[in-house]
Amino acid sequence: MEYKSIKNLLDAIDAGQRHFVGWDFEEDDCLQGLDLKGITFERCFLFLDFSNANLSGSKFIDCNIKTADFSGADLTNALIRNCSVECTLFKGANIEGMIFENNGYYGFNLGQSDLLKLISDE
Image (cartoon, rainbow, N blue to C red):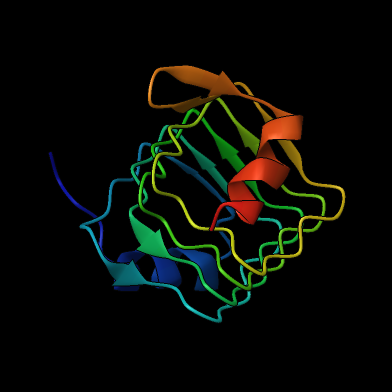
């Protein structure tokens, strides 16, 4: 498996790419505070720090986002669907209009109503 770096991602974004399929990152890389509005990740491994990032209108589809940190991120109108979300942090995130469905959490499928519980348990 070839891991991508944050530099690879930022270079692709600068070149106009907004849809990433099959990109896998090393654990603990940081995208903290970046403007990633409208970005789409599909079938990616994202053990990343997205805290305080602008992820409004973003999509995470069929991704592994275990241990990702979305604390304080803007997830307005974002979509997280069919993702593994164990130990994912959402504390203080703006989740207005966010769709959260069919996500794996320690053998359970979590949906929209579970997102508020995840946030309140942090």
